[in-house]
Image (tube, rainbow, N blue to C red; front, side, top):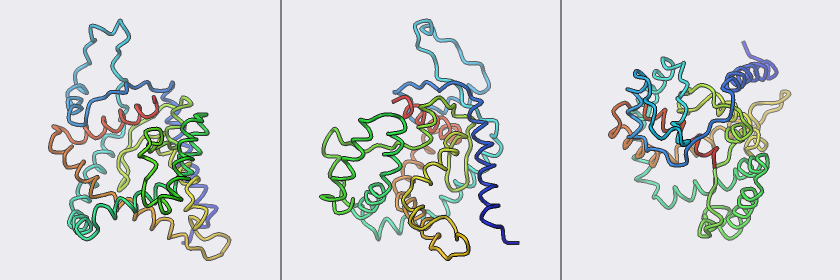
Length: 276
């Protein structure tokens, strides 16, 4: 049975509304230390999940441990973590072949062009966070890289210490205004996320120029090249896989419990980005 676009939109809205409520139940905005341990160090969390954390002697001076990770869906998350791990193993020969055929400078150029094209996501979120400095930086980077950087293929702006790349998204904006991260969740193919960041994906998709150029599906019976937006986004993720898999392999080799290490690293990284 073919579902109408209205029915599909209703299902999507219902899903993300549920996630938003779950994220909101986390209460106040999470506070994170800017300096956090690398993935290997977080493996000790596996033991901390069993034994209650010891109270540090200097807690009275304000050096509190970061709040624990809410992981009520551990069964689901471990299943998809293992699935993604097998998926990475299966496509590794293809990724290695891509790395061999497409040199590093070409992959970097593709990455730069995509990041430059999707600058509205970062620019709008900087404005929503009322951070005019970040917004001006994103706009300046876009203008320089779009002109002198040949449409964004070359990231010339990063040569200026004041124009370093940013990564603002709607998940960070929600966190900036006090929405808690909610529960941790792992999605197939996408990887680690949280309830708040999953809701934030809706905003990121809405602000992505690909959505407005190609659409997400056929509209009112009119044929649209909606599949191109997905194809380009998937191509961008695949283009970054050689470097990502290198980091992923390093994390697995150094971690006692890869699932715990990935979970803790992701949550601490996101808390750190929001705190900045």
